[in-house]
Length: 259
Image (tube, rainbow, N blue to C red; front, side):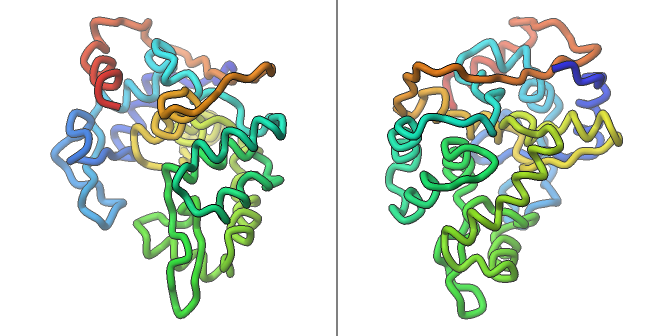
């Protein structure tokens, strides 16, 4: 997809405005020494220039099959038998009621994508807030942490998994309508940047799209054999540097060995 976006300007916008963070204890290689102000937990630091440049660059991400699935389009329909097979594998160990609710969803994005988002977001499930058990599987509205996610679920009466999934449909649809219909585009909002010079990102973690694509990449033991045509959307930026293995060696080696 031709974006019409200058890659260097897009990356610089993320850096200057400190829009991306990284978990300092888990992946210090991605971090600066500055606390990320958008999180109240104090375990996240502002992402460094190298990490932002690496995880936003499709050329870097496509060098390994572990990253390519970030560009799989989310709204494409998948065969029912495949959904029934893969979703429980992605969500192994999760509440069966939630697994069934995700398998049976008719959301604008397919159940496999929803499962990948929930697996990493791991939002509140049946947690008590204001005397009610609430569900916010995808951490929608959790801008500064868990308390925000609980409050959002309570205010929207998400008292069952189905209510949460159905209520999240409107949010997901807005992203899809905006062209943010891949895991990559959810976090690296080149579409809004092209139109307004701003971004509307789903998550702030610099390696978030990579994490969510892991199950789709077969890294976690999920069976992905599928005799089915899949649709990808890979952004083409202007002024993007040619991929250099030497320049990206540090991050590429780290990702391959540690993630």
